[in-house]
Length: 383
Image (cartoon, rainbow, N blue to C red; front, side):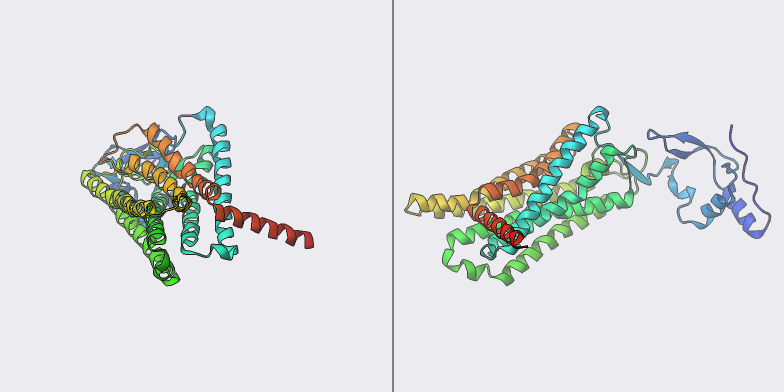
């Protein structure tokens, strides 16, 4: 049975409240899939809701009135529900443990690289400055998605506000695009180091490196502003389930009230610009690098030159391979479960490869790590 209508006062404020409520349809309380109560249109008449004068006053004075939650008899979404791994309830604890341990290793590895490069003066070169920036970018990149995913694995509620979703997408896209541009810059750095070794320190002087690094992050976040603004420029209605464990482009775009084909096409071309063009520039750099290495007469010299590029090339292949699978598609026609699996790889596993690859395959980093550890042990023994 519906509750009794609000008995509003006869004072002027009461009249305005009654006039406001008379414009609204009667509502009844229903339950969504996540068991949160919402109001839905039933039939014209008096605005019937539990007798709560504060709610009636709030609905008049607040900008978020019940009228604004509806458009052409369609419920507007005010928050999203991240589906995540809710279809695997029995594996939640196992997934949380696995992801949490992987995240700790990733975080500690990237922080270790940043610390070693900062402490050891022999690593104060453009190549390792860019590596420190890459590790910092990876650390922030994982902070945007992984803690929220871990929290949702433990909690029943998987809701995220539209503002929170917008912020998460902005930082995720900004750091992801910056990561692509930064890998391109690191490829250019290797090109200058191998093809113009005598002029390397002149071309890649600190001022130039700082400006290039700033340009990389400004460009990445500029792309993120454009894409995020396009996606959230219209309201979301009907469904509120995001088929992902974070707010990614395709799952959120599907929930838009307006036609999203044009937006998807523009975002697709931006993805081509970021992912494909960056990758082609890296390939171009390595084409010149290979041509220069083949001219080195000694086998030891060629092997040393290749070893300086191997770690970077490994990270490039993994990062751009995953990005191409997800973002170089006009419309997301793939299986959401498969997309989530790939997303776990490039949000959790790929950031782990950065410290592992650069630590195991780079002799200078290994030597600097041993030197730093020995210095720390001597300091602790003295105190």
